[in-house]
Image 1 (cartoon, one colour):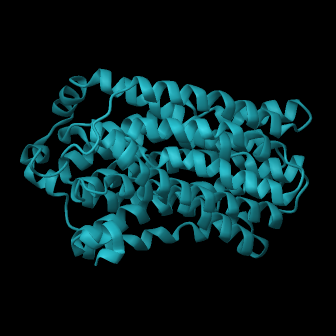
Image 2 (tube, rainbow, N blue to C red; image 1 turned 90 degrees about the vertical axis):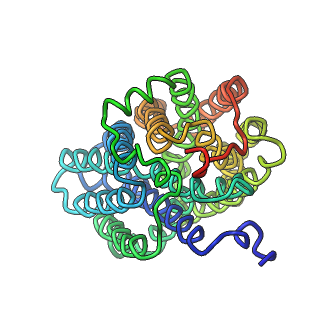
Length: 410
């Protein structure tokens, strides 16, 4: 099995667990980015500005910390596996309901509820996977696991490219409800986390006891929140309005814009795997810093190129670096978190970082629309600033590369 690399050393149960966690995050992101890719179409249908619809992104991101806290508590109390299934069903239901929204106000409420359901998936799924997998090769698995976000974006881009013309934005949301079927796979093939099973006290944990555990690690939590705010600005600031930039400022058709987004996501997927594996040798913090700083020289090609070919190259390279840095996140912050609060602390910090940056997309859209639709300058300034700040925050923080996360620690 050596030709399979790190996968060859996993047991069958470990493989099922990893792929279930990867699929859960991928399909979660798929549902999120369906909305992002339909911003222009929804604004046209409801006769509003793009920044009005982009409020839905803010509401989704703002509600995710509450979902992370709620579902994280449930996962500490009842186990990672059943709560992962609950998460998948919940966000699929709200995705389906979004297809039938009669007006923008209703759609925004549904996107907020979707954000609540979405908020728990990353923390629960990452804890289940990384507590089950061996420490060896964790950087590789982290990179691939985080790129479930990109796989979801890529899948949404492909569906948009080939199906949107026929089903419209409402049909896209109906397609987005399909992830609910994944619960049957999890129920049949995925075992519970060995670390959670070893920590029997987690089954009896109350909210007060969990808060006591979290409070004991407040400095770490605050650092994680700051770090994840920077990371979320890095990804959402470079992705969420890139298709409107291609449509509105460059004047490309939806087919060309979707094709460029697909190319961009291929770069993101490869970057996450590459830098995730590279962090095994260079370390988590230094690899994040390298990837973030390498995004800076990509800005002119990514934001100011005049042809589809050069924009495709710029998008590929930019997201190779952005998601390259992101690929290290699951391993890095789960290694920092103690076992007793691993399902709640990283996920809560992740989603609070989302909350802090939840207004970024509407602010970006408002700035661009107020300056004659100049999305390129707005995108360039966003990434230029965020890449530097992310590097500094990362290098000032702690690292716990390859710490034991299995049953022994619990």
